[in-house]
Length: 129
Figure 1 (cartoon, rainbow, N blue to C red):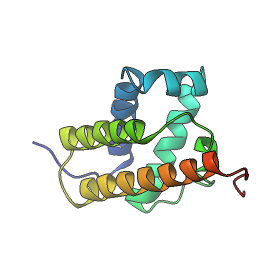
Figure 2 (tube, rainbow, N blue to C red):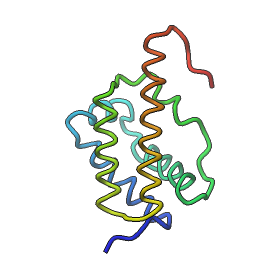
Figure 3 (cartoon, rainbow, N blue to C red):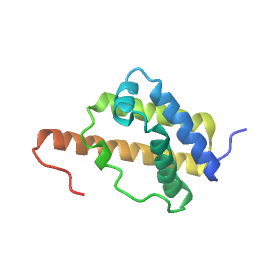
């Protein structure tokens, strides 16, 4: 029986399962694998810290999540796939308030990142730190 996200092991399961899907997805895998290369363990750890901060209120992530994504070669189709995979992962593993918050936060981030990436593609400006 599925339960809600409540501990760090749940966050690790979510992150590992989701990024395994991303790494094997026909649309997303090349983008992520080409950017992250051999740094997957570091990336996954950073994502665990991010979601731990967001979902468990245990502040362990420090940084600006948008900047590493600012110049990715992505568009609406990529973000739609990311959200689809993320929501499917959450729904396959968890149920409850924190699971819903994860999906809401994922959707919110995807929309924000997409709009910002499009803005910087169309304008000759550099994202502020």
